[in-house]
Length: 383
Image 1 (tube, one colour):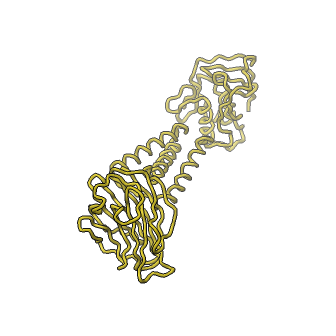
Image 2 (image 1 turned 90 degrees about the vertical axis):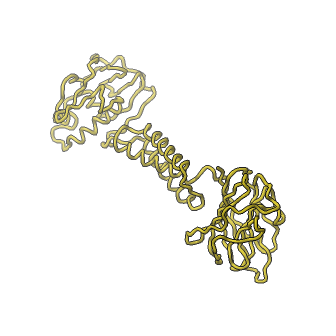
Image 3 (image 1 turned 60 degrees about the horizontal axis):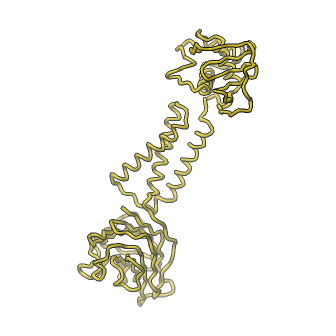
C-alpha cells in the first residue's frame, strides 16, 4: 500500500487533514475510521479520474487481501455518509458501473502542509467505525428501531384484551395517520437505504397498532373487587358523559344463581331507582337488562351464566335519546345482545349525564359464604 502524503484538501464545507487523519465539516470534526479516510484521500488525490475497483482494493487492503467489491462498496457508503453524499444524486463521489469510483467535485484546493488544522476539541459528528462493514444503522436509529417494537409488544400483550376495538372509519384513519407519522419519524433518523426504509415502515406500523390498541378514549381502569350479599351499593365515579359513550367491565360470578346488579347513574346511588341503566345476574341464572318501557328485566338473547367463568359486559349509552344497549361476551368469545335501545328506568328518564358505576348483590335463599361476584377492569369510552 502506498503511504498517505501530508497536506490539507479543502472542498465545499469540508477540510481533510491527511497527517492527523481528520475530517472537518465547517470546523466541526467528523469522526471517521482509518480505512474510509484512506479511501477518501486516495480518491481526492485522483480527483477527476475514474479509479478502478481493483486499484482501490489494492490501495486500502494490499495485494494479498481477500476483500472484494462488496467490501469496497461498504467502505464507499461510509465515506458518503461522512460527507452527507447521496449515491443516487452524488455531489462528491460518483460511481462508474462495472469500473470504479471517481471524486467528481472539482473545486478542490490542496496544500502540502496542515497548518490550517482546526481545533481538535470541537464538536464531533459520529460515523460508524470500520468494523461495521455493512454500512450500519447508527446508534440513534438502532435504539429507535429496538425500543419501538419492544414498546409495541408490551402494549399489545397488556392492553388489547381489555380495550374495545371498533372498525370505524375514524379508527382506520387514526391507525393510518399514526403509522405514517411514526414511520416518518424513524426514517428521518435513518440512512436512506432500502433496508432502513423497510425497517422504519415496520416500526411505524407497530407503533400505530400500539397507539390504536391503547385507545386514548379509555379513561381509567378499576381494580378488582368482590361484592357479597347485603353489602351497600358500591359506587365508582368516572368523568361525566353527556353524549354517546361506552362502559366496559368484566365480572366473574363465584357461584350460580346470584342476584347481582350492575348499573349506571349521574351520581352515587343508594337504591335501585337512582340508576337509569341496569343489568343483572338473576337468581334464575340468566343475564338480563332493565327495560324502562316495560318496567321489568328481560333479555333479547338468552345467556345462562356459570360460576367461575368470565363475562365481558358492554353498555352503549345514548343520553340525549334516553336509550341504552347491553352486550355480553362469554368466556368462549361469543357475544350476546342482551338489550337493544332499551329505555332508561322511569325514575331516570330525564337524566342528561352519567358519572357513576354502581354494583350491588342482594341476598338469596341459596347464599352462603362462597356467594360473591368479582368485578374488574372498568373502562369508559367517549365519542
